[in-house]
Length: 305
Image (cartoon, rainbow, N blue to C red; front, side, top):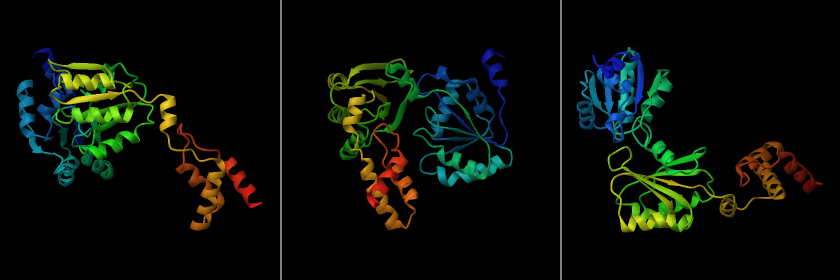
């Protein structure tokens, strides 16, 4: 038994548990000993694409002994309870997607939610993540970031989504595809301007991995000059304080909040303090904090006097 087989044999396979396992996003060497052991010994393997599962197993030199079922976007809700019935009888159900971590733009969320509702254990065998890889390699701030998934396909929806992110101070991460990247770069330029820093990360962990770093205008030009292939991750620098404040919706004054609270109390039959609490919660300040309720209450009293 070689060292890899020994590590896999030493892995504990939890009975009566759903296990979400990350699969390589490109480099087969990133497969963990836990993934190998789970593929070999899980009672059921729920795979986004069964052909890709068997190809992964072949490349890892693994024989899948458990029952393999197709578990994808179109059937995950209908199949979740049947899989969990097996978990309830002691089976280990392994959930894998084509690449990366299940539930992150991939199937898996339905079975996690139903397992929680039914009080059944769920665990995770972590591993490769295109989001975290791209973030780490971008050179942009990593202490705070937001992940927005794939940009919308339609131009109008994409523009609306990007405009909503104008005041976002955190580093922003998107997925994008080769056939939409040129249009998306045009929309990023229109929404954020030419100077925001960004990184376009493609073919992560593969032989042709490439990280393009620069301003939005520079990356857009590189996409025109040398159209990128393969799925990619876009990492965009967050808004500066000045950009965030300029893009934030107009802030309501204490007096404006007081007027809204009085109207809310009359319309909904609320105590004025409850109406103030609701109105203040619904209208955060540009930095995300909330107005002082006591100041709003004082303004209400002044209006009523």
